[in-house]
Length: 54
View 1 (cartoon, helix red, strand yellow):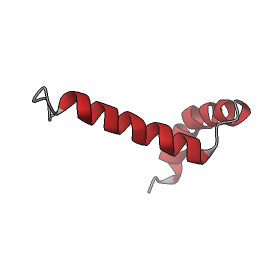
View 2 (view 1 turned 30 degrees about the vertical axis):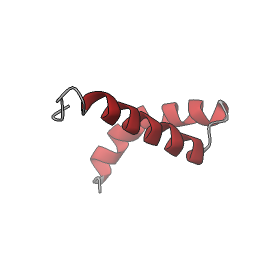
View 3 (view 1 turned 180 degrees about the vertical axis):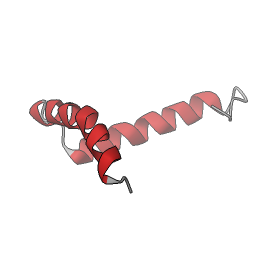
């Protein structure tokens, strides 16, 4: 949980990005699928190369 001061500074960065994504038609479910696919692809790329710390 962010306090009121941290929330204001973080919102200055995240709110414009969120508005752009909404205008582009990206749904929360699509964002979840993209993030999950990215995590799986990174795991499949890093694990065989013994780069677990990344």
